[in-house]
Amino acid sequence: MSHPSDTDTPAFAAAQPQPLSPQAPLPHRKVIRSWLVPLVQRTTAYAVLLLCMDYVLLGAALAGTVFIKSVWLKLLSGLLAGFVVGRLFIIGHDACHQSLTPHRRLNRWLGRIAFLPSLTAYSLWDMGHNTVHHGFTNLKGVDFVWAPLTQAEYQALSPGRRFMERLYRSGWGPGLYYMIEIWWKKMMFPSPASSGGTHRPIFTRDCLLVSGFAALWLGGIVWAAIATGQSVWLLGLIGFVLPLLFWFTMMGFVIYGHHTHVRVQWHDDRAAWQRAQPFVSTTVHLTFPVKIGALMHHIMEHTAHHVDMSIPLYKLKSAQAMLEHLLPERIIIQRFSWGWYFDTARACKLYDFTRQCWTDFAGRATSEPRVVIAAG
Image (cartoon, rainbow, N blue to C red; front, side, top):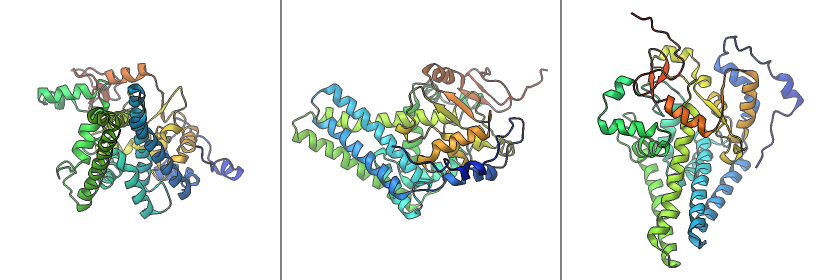
């Protein structure tokens, strides 16, 4: 479903600056955001329509897991349900950023509704994602999303924890990473230590809300299995477990692709991090041979989102195109392929903050060092 662009008017085109030379200093974030002001306008009706449409799709996919006789088609319906859970999460993600509609209270309600199938606690996501991840993107010790270890940190881990780190960064483990390190530890009744030493009553209420939804979802699947004379275990796996596993994998893969690349920098010094203007340099725009951007509500146009979180998902494509036009050679644009993905997984194991480069688990540089250490 397309949305009319605000960039197709002569007045808008005339007001835009000229593309910036790659050698020129990067403007302040406020200046860059000012270029995108016409794209910040939000539409309530369209946002609600997107939410309703995705819930209808989710209902249809879950119905397919129950009423379709072929086990293979049931499995396909379960996978489709997991994908739609991801679409609903993206809508909730926008609402949590207050970018879905112009109404703050409505955004909070729509966000909680959209987050239910992904079992995401709205207030905990708001704190961990909006405050920590967006406020301190790729700052070691603060941003926890796919934060790389140093070789010394890796060597200090227990054998079991080293095994998990290798699995997470093998290319095969993004879903497991998200399920354990983000969702389970930080989104489901987290300890005060896991939530930054902060505990608020709303955290518990939101966790109870999504737990209640999970119980209703699973209970509905069990009831449907009994009512239709099917295996409770099989239908529970296909209609509940499989969609969630697909969702965890989808989410882990997306956030890995957004922030892991041989050209993406991490910092452990706050002053150096601020000088790097990380809202541009720490995100990747993944493009695909098949135009699937709209299917994922344009979440892969991620640089524009980090530059200005108030841009609604239905205008991110225009915003990303504008930034890439005005800031040539500044934004990491990567055409996706499985070859590139597994090459990245092999290269981006650990990070050397002294040399400013990615390394393998043995500490060998796998990206171009930005700081050369003198021998001797």
